[in-house]
Image (cartoon, rainbow, N blue to C red):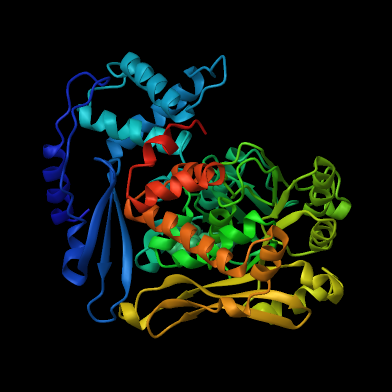
Length: 542
Ligand SMILES: Nc1ncnc2c1ncn2[C@@H]1O[C@H](COP(=O)(O)OP(=O)(O)O)[C@@H](O)[C@H]1O
Ligand SMILES: [Mg+2]
């Protein structure tokens, strides 16, 4: 440790004021300058706390190259504290009893139990200032019940993905504001990296080993974990990627505010979904397909029976009549498939549960075939698919392994594609997600573009005159097309009204949508006069 770093650390420790009793801590707010070495070479762009007072982050920029880095600044244990920590860890592992009944928050349980045990042993383990005990407890919680060295990153709401490409290679993160950033975090040895990954996989209730080196799992908190273990398939050593789950998912209102959807577009989807339209969301990796699908599903009529089928649980709906099915990997060795429950099996099974709408997280293989069978028998369906545009999507659908007959393609009503773009309107630097276009499928190779995104002014332009869905719906409902369009406008006003009032959490949005389904005229009247409908809507129990 350099003298400067030592001075910095002492200054920080002095600012930490704790009460003598370990059980009660005063709220301390400390400004944390990142280590001095960073000051000289890099410019600090932003810094924020992750977990006061233990972990902070600084986004720094190299003035020469303009490249940004993610600097995690976590209070570390010194050698004395590390010794005590090792002993405390042994004691904790031996003494903490597993809870008698199921507990909602294992971390909280551990923190409370650990405090009691530390209080019991702190005298016999030698004198340490309270600050050190807090650091030790923080590290114990992080390493035993948390996500280990990446725990602080998991606390950063700005991080979308965390990935490690192998041993002795920097961890990369995808930051909401700065995109891909190298973090000052590395796993130096195979052992350290492997242990950490095994622990993560075990936290998900799954198994990883040289015999089963590839695992897809769902971590506590529904974060998606993908692992390639040891050097079985990844020559640089264990690699993992975590796609973080948003506790509070993006609602359609969030996506409108972010500019991904336009209000009119969302109203059009709302109209189509009410009338059982089937929808496919296209896009590349991390384009925002699942997020768009989830937000759209919120527009489905509340009483509908929805079944979602996924490989790892990502979808989060507010509907009460919702069943979530998750595929399961095989337990057997090699390709025996013992105990495996595939997406294909689940889609087949789901048909026996009579869903109104079947949602498949992502179609890749033969499950697409069954989904189309479901569409053919009059069920509503939604899915995402990895494809850049409608032509390549249809090509994939009609080829192996999906094998959908071209005659079945028109069973899909709407295809929307989402992409990350850098609108010139906003400086051309930052990436935003935008729905690029929406097509209605009239027939195989006959697609009608009803919305298009214009890069020059970052606007979505509708072309309702090309729609075949709207005339078909108006005919079925016995209303004129003019009335249909005016209904779309009304719904646009309701969505606009929610944006204005910042009714955005997916539950609140679902509540207003449910109100509109139940009593459209009353709700619309209130929207027109700008009255508070929120109170009625939110008071409903969901
Ligand atoms: N419209 C959006 N605006 C901002 N961030 C988004 C948007 N859509 C998705 N994201 C974020 O991007 C990441 C990837 O989104 P996801 O929907 O899982 O992508 P995909 O399903 O295409 O792989 C997630 O962390 C999500 O929160
Ligand atoms: Mg996805």
